[in-house]
Image (spheres, rainbow, N blue to C red):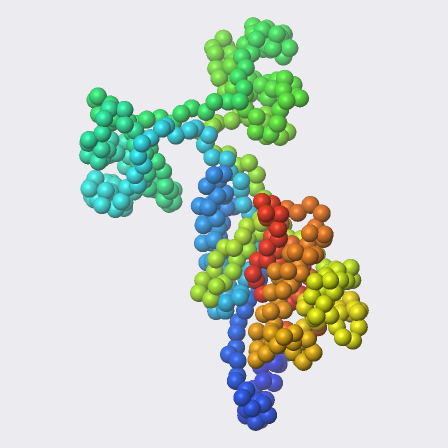
Amino acid sequence: MNKKLIYGLCAASFLMTACDYNEDNFPGFDQEPLTDVVYYEGEFTGKYPTEGYFSLVQGDEESGKATIEKALIEMLEDTYPYCDKGSSAKIKVKVADVMPSQEKEPAYEDAYELSTADYDAMGTGKNEPGEHDNFSYNIDPNDYLPDFCAGKYADKAEGFICKIIYKYYSNRVTTTQAKYYKKGADGWTEEPLIPYDADKKYSLKEPDYVAMGTEAGEPGANDTFVSDEQADACLPIFLQNKYTYVAKEGLTVEVTYKVSGKEKKAIYRYNGSAWEVYNPKASIVVSITERITVMKFDGKEWKLSNLISDIKELSLTNAEYTKLVEWVKENKPEFMSTQNTTSEYYFGADTKNNNINNKYSTWTQYYNVDGYLNDLKDEEIQAIMDERLAKEAFPLILLPDMVNNPDPDISYTVIYKIYGGRGNGNYAMSFYYSKEDNTYTWDEMAPVMQ
């Protein structure tokens, strides 16, 4: 029989036979409301964009994270329609690192994003901007924006450049785009982006063609490639040989060469292992990797807390429990056990049993230093216990020695054993490393039983 059903029947039986048991035997007992705290770890089961992965564009990562967060919220709300504050999830997703267009913006003096009223003023009829408050394949921005600029910036002098931000609908997706316009003697014209300047420039010379072969149909026969296909096949090999010792991932070279005697130019980019034709006007996918998203539920909604590459588990051993006891002995001697030298009650470390003693009665009756636990409820005492581990023991005392090469892109999960308190067993807390501060920070999620 299903375990949940068995427990439910037992609970129902208990309630029917002794519904006043707590009230009769524990004066002042106040029934705690049931909570539904969710801890989910697993794969993303929602819907990816058409590419089959999410994208983080270099320089605009926040927009990509917002898209990921929205998809994860939809998945979690579908999976867990009801959950309480403290719920969390670690979800694996496919994420592309995207390098955007490398063309640069012209130096503009003002940026303006079109409003609903602006679109409407351009016309609300069929195939006009105001119909859906955007432009599209059959509503060209250049048919409307020069006139818009003439009205909005009528008092500007010739040479003034503005950036107009607008919505563009294509393939069932609306994106935010921009164009630049310059005021001239004859009105407003689109100002192009500044072309990309490659790291290096090289023009093929006679010896270069000769080295590729001098037989009929080979480049060296007439110092020219005979076709675009031949150029595409030979140039990556040529660049591999020419820049063997200086090529680093991301290096770009503008190559000037001839095809059937006609001069052409192409930009190549080294991807770390080979040379590829590179179009700086287009964005390129540098890599696609599996990332781990950390989601938290604040009681009202799910929010993306972090986006990491890996989770590393670190289990406490006798060495770590001993280190905590030694630290308390030196810094908080008033919390050392009065019965032995192997345990303390500031963190609760016990080197004999290799665990954290969270037994409330022991803490309150024997190690209530200066009465700091007086009148506190069990959950309030537990919060103190958890916070000391999360903000002192693990990040300040243990993790610096447990991790050899800390990485900000990794979640460090500390696994420790608890006796008493929230319940016997192994629990985990997660931490992130900050390279700038050289510190570890708790992710503020409640300990999760393993």
